[in-house]
Length: 198
Image (cartoon, rainbow, N blue to C red; front, side, top):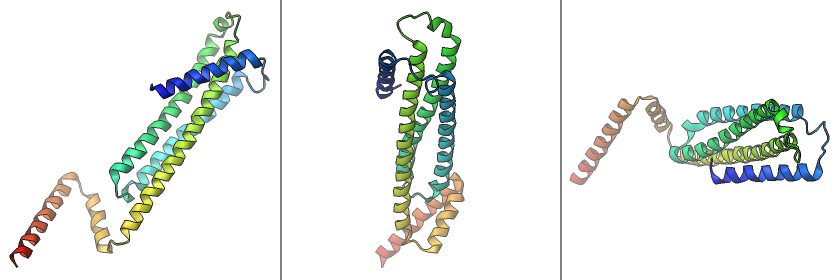
């Protein structure tokens, strides 16, 4: 866990405690175990679906990208962020189940309503995870748009024959790609030698 995530968790916990102390009791229809658990499960499902869809989209468009290393670097960072948010939502669901199991022990703490603090903490952290997921999806789409726009403009100057060669090259295994690379280098060298001898 990095410092940013730790600070976010501590801030969410502090806000939850402050809200519980100053504004309790809350509307039981809004801040209740079943409502918060349903929200968490729904958000986890949506987040998991988003990650799966984005992996599919990235896989579909990776062949059209000219700069694979930049594409992979940017996409990996954003997908890592999305996966962290999905894991955070799963941890919140586990926290809610744990709070239910230990609810009798939590009721023994007289000064604070620990269950309400946990419920508020879950809601606040989920909102932060959803916001972060939204920003990550936006950045990934921008990255996709930028990379595909660049590749489209560079493809305009390529002939149909050259496109065919690129597609055929991509279908080769590593051994045959190495053979083609060596052959192209040899042909280029032979051409340069012939031009210099003229």
